[in-house]
Each structure stands twice: as C-alpha cells, then as structure tokens.
Image 1: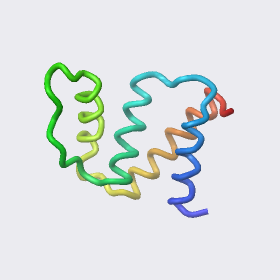
Image 2: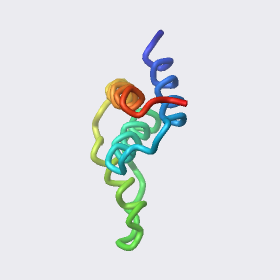
Image 3: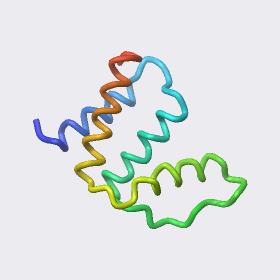
Image 4: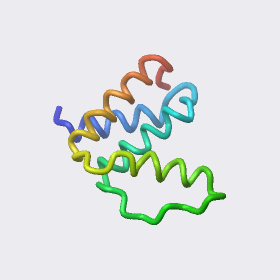
Length: 89
C-alpha cells in the first residue's frame, strides 16, 4: 500500500475509535490532516472568543512548512497509535 492509501485507512480508523481521544490528540490529528490535505494554513486566525476555532487554527498553523507526505506519515503514526490504545469499532 502507498502512503495515500495508508493515510485514508488511518483516517477511517480515527472515525471508528471505540472511545474519544483527548482534546490534545484530536488537535494534533486535525493539524496533521489539514496540512496533509490542504497544505499551509492561509486562513485568518479566529477571534479571541472562538476558543475551539482558535485551537484548531493554531494546531494547523503550527505545521506550516511541513510537506504533505511528512504530515501524512505523522498522521498515520498518530492514528495507528490511537487505534492500538483505544481500539477500533
């Protein structure tokens, strides 16, 4: 299997985890997923009172400059680790 297929499989595993990962794990997955699929964050930072939006924006923006392949690889590693520890339905 190639990297893209591994990435797609990992994304499906994340959707089917038996229990919810920590907020920090979710933010890490989000940032890696966005960097892998969209590239560098070019959106405006959400307002001060949008705590969830701001956290997601920062998680993605923190990956700026990371290649799509590197982000996919790190996403697969993180998702596989979570699937192993939390289980998959």
